[in-house]
Image (cartoon, rainbow, N blue to C red):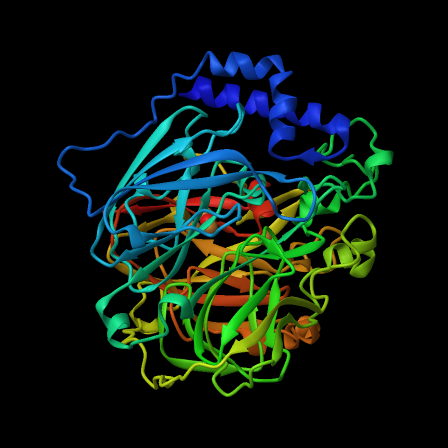
Length: 568
Ligand code: C2O
Ligand code: CU
Ligand code: CU
């Protein structure tokens, strides 16, 4: 196992050098083409004796069984040439056909709909090009460690990993995406992602908008070259200046400057917003109430969601399940990995009305080394910097339909934990975010595949407080607290019980703080520069090794991830 892991990393480095010569990482067919001319990749194929493949167990009888493969394909995203992407293709083996909802002409995988209590088997097959180990992570689900998609379980192309689990989560909007070490950003960007929606009796009794009125809205940003192919971690203006050190050559980067390619360190920003995998998305809607399942599936972009007509945003669920009661805000913040279910009431609009879901301007989320917007000019996408106001998609009310629903006052019976019941109520476990050179860290450590320190060890069936601290190294050139970090925990949902911000960073914070929804259960939380946030959670289901990390996928891939261990 160690040997094959080593080989895969060796291949990876080689691959980076090869793509470095072209200046940009062209995904899909491009990657494949490059790799087939690389001799290391064929030696990897000969060494596919990875023993970490999980087989089906005869004692497990699934209610739902799905074949899921990650595979390159071509999708018509824009007029002209089709785009080479990587996509999850799902096929129903057993169960209700309504469990899989295909999004037509999209790289996104089918929406998977399950019920709490269902037993699910997923036969995952990695059919990506050589050099792309992968594993599926079910973001937000409570699962035993070997079902959770930890990077140590990544399988090589050609191999299969069989998931078997019972859905114990409450109704809510979850999602799935790859989680291989250092390749999560690239594979997710290439198209590997999908929604997983859980329903339960409590939700069904609420009679929320369903069917055609329950819509996935996956927000992602992408950059295309002139032949419609995806570009990843290339600033689009640096190609001619490539110095041969490779596009991800660390300090040298492809800018040849000290900052390197800022996108690879700070996070990829695309030049175009896609909704459900489509540019210029338009939702044709009736005069009805809709439930919008909004996922920020972007690698690093943060959104500040607001309706163009000034109507309030009404949230009915956050990452981990329905809220106790609806929460109304002028705008909602949504960082990568976070979900919010929005009650979108178009019932009082006239046919012909056009409406836009915008991302409003905000500031302070990105300020590395005190460079502020300069940083953006030095290699970041200037047109669509983080915090730039932009339209996300349009809604056209094109038909009259009678609506009888009303917003329920009560949603879920949400039993919340009490902060004083934490075993460390007066002494929260610190999770400090830092930057060491070009390496993102948590508590001064980068990711190690199997390691969890004593400070990262918790006990099953205990309640804990964790404090995420984005306040280090004020004034240093490479200051981690110059960036917002969406911090995500596997294996549990948590409550956000307090937020504090450094006075000197309050101005930026003030432009986002009213969009936080901290009333419910979450698995991903945005931590602004200067913020410290207390989380409260219970480790109640499974022992084992789980990761926690920044969901800015370039940060995650650059080490901003650690394990924690739940012991009996
Ligand atoms: Cu959605 Cu560990 O990630
Ligand atoms: Cu996750
Ligand atoms: Cu981060």
